[in-house]
Image (tube, rainbow, N blue to C red; front, side):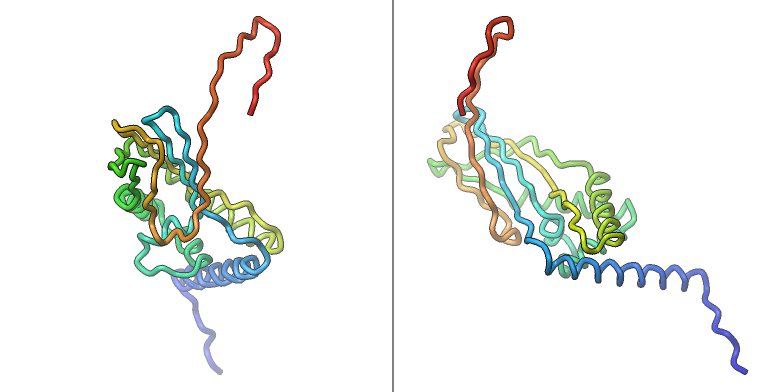
Length: 200
């Protein structure tokens, strides 16, 4: 009579991780065919003639693909990121920040270089939690569509020659990016008087 196979604690953990990843990938693959493709966006807001704030909204997979050693499908990237320990995830996130600081540049309408400063990225804890929450939601409700929060970061553009127009040089990994440029109209409102109309 054959002896029953004993499974060690390490084996159980590995088996559990494999099963979890398989289920997640199954759920994600089902959603990949049933929902619209997420888009990358860039918002340019001109504060004054020589100052523009650029804000990027990039999908999680596109944001991390340039710094992952073995880039995979979008579904696998999410599972890979969610399974990282905090220290390793933070190091990958910082590596991505460094990549974008070097990869993103702008030229002005006068073909002069533009100074980029005051880079701001959301905390890595928020990014990882968003990924894990999304995967957990898809695991529980495979047929529903969990809203995917893009990774947001911004940078200030300045030039002593002015910024009548800018030409962005963005990472090719992003593909098509929806660009929205605006110049806010500012006015003071005196609340002690009758309400005023604000035109768009």
